[in-house]
Length: 284
Image (cartoon, rainbow, N blue to C red; front, side):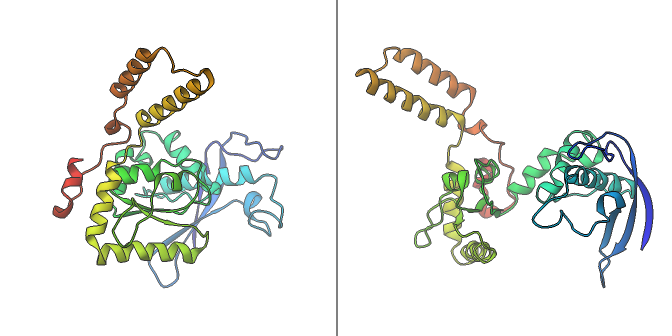
């Protein structure tokens, strides 16, 4: 296994756990390959942070400097790929331990080769047939809305904003805008992905109807604001015993809101799909 030294800029051990001191730190990078393959593997070696008996801390506790450890891992990973001259096309930031990676990419690496482009991520999403979002919890969620705008059917767990915005497929008629499962188990996710793929192969007309329905959904602030307005006016009428008097103002406000944010501008415009059978998606 080969090794080299890299410098993780801006991250250094702190004497106070939970705080991150800004200073350059030199760490060792080790290189190897996945057994019996040509797939390269890169390791960051920094004993102060990672030469420990437990990954996160002795169960059920956590190491007090975990914020520093994984901030170093996130920054160091980006410095490593630059040091070896390899710019990834896709970066998988798994869980909170790697949560700073996209933050660094959008700040420290802004305008650099690592930064990539927002347009590319939208093209990837627009070019897919399904979008998997099996969240444990999701207060709102924007990714599934973008996916439906592109006609990419979401596969989601029934929680929070996902279950509020995605209606599951009715297998007999091809209704719905995606595929929803309830149990937080790997087999439930696998079964639902299998259901979606089977529908794609066996009932393509259902997939077509679901895509059209998903792209036609209005999730803009125009609709939400109108619903809030109706709720407030109803509450006022119940409280006062008569309708709100300034109806012209309400109408004018709604008209201005419609001009400022139409449903078409609420989410990024879809990218054309290179499929003759789905050519309508390029025009929506």
